[in-house]
Length: 297
Image 1 (cartoon, one colour):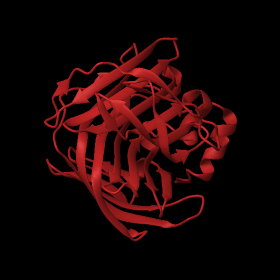
Image 2 (cartoon, one colour; image 1 turned 120 degrees about the vertical axis):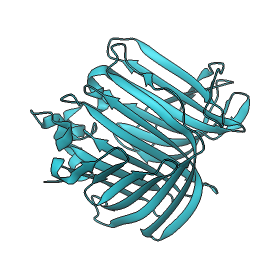
Image 3 (tube, one colour; image 1 turned 90 degrees about the vertical axis):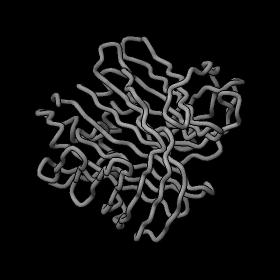
Image 4 (cartoon, helix red, strand yellow; image 1 turned 30 degrees about the horizontal axis):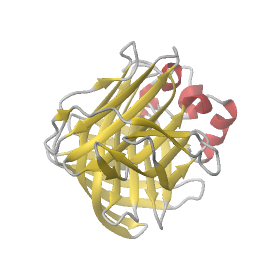
């Protein structure tokens, strides 16, 4: 892996009743880490983390960065400190043992992700081929069981992976992403703005068996900024209209939301994210991050 590079594995899920949700990201080369930015050596293996966010009545956030001594991996498993991911060919089992910040509380549990199908190809996000994204499993069955906080639920989710050979903020100014379950499959929109002024709008539909199908690109739809940090949000929909149902996460450079819109002729509830790498580059924002992202040597 190149200096300044990264790879991450990403899971998001919502409970069947919509009251609970989670995001899990396992990083080698933690792209949103201020410690990685400040490290002159730019060794991705020295900046690893498992980011866990629980949404709903028992919300928690954990993202503790660790060095290379805390990392072990092989072809089917990855361990970062006390947490791990294991793939048996059909199920991704994620065992979590983290602590939240800035209020230190335990976050322990097991999440099992069962992809209904795997897709065939990754996509390049930048014009130089430095950043790659693979929506491996657009539709998954997810079972979450936590000891702390005490909760358990089942629902639907999504699994992907990203890898790159440089910093995100050097190649992109911002992006938006969303995914929605359809009657037969899933839809994903991924819109990036690059530093060179160009952009890319991916409009993807995947059948239940993972087959990539063409879908008419939807129209731009405006959204209100977030309430606290005024993060800009935009999306696309068939009729050029969308509403924010719930804001899960509102930070200085990132927002995560549940929307109501239409895609491929269906009324859907997409999970949506907005990322501003211009804001992430702000030195004041980077100085705030250690309060939520502690580092263990």
